[in-house]
Amino acid sequence: MSSVSFVLARLARDRSALVGLVLIALLVLCAVLAPLLATHPDDVFELHPAERLRAPSGAHWLGTDRMGADVYSRLLFGARITIIIGIIAVGASLAIGVPIGLVAGYYHGWPSDSLMRVSDIFLAVPQVVLAIAIAQTLGPSLPNVILALSVTYWPWFARVVYAETRALQKEVFVESTAALGASPWRLTVLHVLPNIASPIIVRASIGMGFTILTAAALGFLGLGPPPPTPEWGRTIAESREFLPDAWWYAAAPGLAIFLTVMGFNLLGDGLRDVLDPRLRRSRTAQDG
Amino acid sequence: MATIELTVVAMIVSVLVGIPLGVLSALWRNSLLDHTLRVVTVSGLAIASFWLGIMLQLLFAMRLGWTPLNGRLQGFPPQSITGFYLLDAALTWDWATFGTALQHLALPAATLAFPALATLVRFTRAGVLDVMQSNFVLYERAMGLPRPLIVWKYILRSALTSTVTQIGLLFGILLAGAVVTEAVFDWPGIGTYAVNSILRSDYNAVMGFTVWAGAIFIVVNLLVDVAQTLVDPRERTT
Image 1 (tube, each protein chain N blue to C red):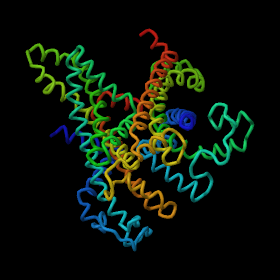
Image 2 (cartoon, chains in turn brown, blue; image 1 turned 60 degrees about the horizontal axis):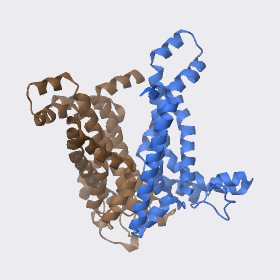
Image 3 (cartoon, chains in turn cyan, red; image 1 turned 30 degrees about the horizontal axis):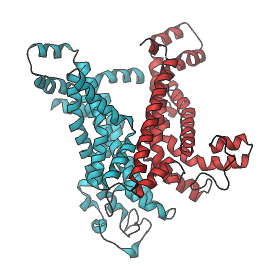
Image 4 (tube, each protein chain N blue to C red; image 1 turned 135 degrees about the vertical axis):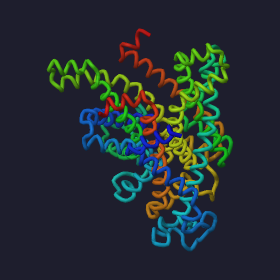
C-alpha cells in the first residue's frame, strides 16, 4: 500500500496530473450519481415534444434536444455508457494483450514470432478504420462497439509487454531466478509482470482516453448503441440538423468528451513521469 | 484525389506550423508561449475531430459566414490536370476558382490538421530539448559559437531526424481522421464514400475501404523507413 500512496503523493504534486485526476473523479461521480444529479432523470426515455429545442435556462441547464429531453440529464447518463465502454474495452485488451505479450516475450522461436506478426496485422490498419469495419459488420450495438474496440486495441498492450519482457530477460535477477529452477509460469507472473506493471498502467490510462474518443467517433457515424441511448457521439450527430440555432445541443456532449479524454491523457502523462524512472530522469533533464 | 488533396494540405499546414512552434517553445522553455502551446497541444490530442469540425462550421460558416459550410467547390471544377483543384486552378491561372477552392478547404484542413499539429509540436519540442542538453551543444557553446549558428546548423539538424519518422506516422493517422472529417464537411472523398457505405450497409465497399487504408498505411510506413535512412546516417550501417 505504501507504494500506492507514494504514487498518489507524487501525482498530487504534478499540477496537470492532478487536473486529470479531478476530471476523472468528476466523470465517475457523474456516472454513479446520475439519477441523483440529473434534474430530469426520466428524460432518457420520455418525450416532451412541447419543450423541443429550448435554449439553456434555469429549468434546463444545458437546454433540451429534439425530443424535448433535458440535455444535461442525458449527458450524465451518457457518462455511464462512456465509462462502461472504456473500462470493458481496455480491460479486455489487457486480458488479451498482456498474456500474449508475456508468452511471446518469454519464449523465443516461431510461435512467439507468429504471435507478434498477428498483432502486427492489426496494427497495419489505422485503428479507427478497423474498428469501423468490425462494428459495421457486427451491427450497431453497445457490446459490438466494445468488441470492436477491444479487438483493435489489444496489440498495443501486446507490443509494450513484449518489448519490456524481452528487455527484462537480460537482467541478472531474471537469469538468476531461472537458474534457481523457477518454472516459466512463476518467473513471468511473479517476477517479470510486477516489474513491467508501470508501462502497462500508463498505456491503460492513455488507452482509456483513446478508446473513448474512438467510441465517440463510432457513435457519431451511427455505429454506436442505437437510440434512445444517450451516447455522446450519437447525440452530436443528432444535433447537426438543428444547427446553428440549437448550438447547446451539439456543444455540450462534445465538451464532455473533450474533458473526459483530456482527464485520462493528463493522468497518463503524469503516471508516466511518476512510474517510469527512466523517462522521469530524461524529463527532469529537459524541464529543469 | 479529393481525400489526398485534403490530407496533403492538412499535413503541410501541420508541418509548417507545428515544427517552428515546437522549436520556439523548446528554445523559450517555460515562457508564456511554451505554456500556451502546452495547453493547446493537450487539447489537440483530446478533442473529438468531428466535434471540432462542427464547432468550426457553427462559428465560421453559420455565424460569421466567412467560409462555405461544406463541399469542395461551387460551380465548375478547373480543367483537370492533376486532380488537385488547388493545383489545377493555379496552373490554369484561374485565381477565382483557386480562391473558392481554398475557402472550401480551409475548415476541413484545419480540423484535420489540429491533432497532427499538436503531436508535432510536442514531439519537436522534446527532440530539440533533448539535443540542447547534449554534450556537443555544450561544447559549441563553450567554444563561443553564435547562438543562431548553433541552433540552425547543429540543433535543428539532429533534432529533426526523428521528426521525419513522426511525420510519416502522422500521415496514417490523418488518413484515418479523414473518414470522420469528410463526413462532417461532405467532402467528396473516399471517407465520405466509406461513411455512406456504412449507412447503406454496403459491406463490400466498407471492406474495400479498409483494405485500401491498410495498403496506403503500409506503403507510407515503408517510405518513412527509406526516408529515415536517407536523413540519418546512423541507420545506414544496420
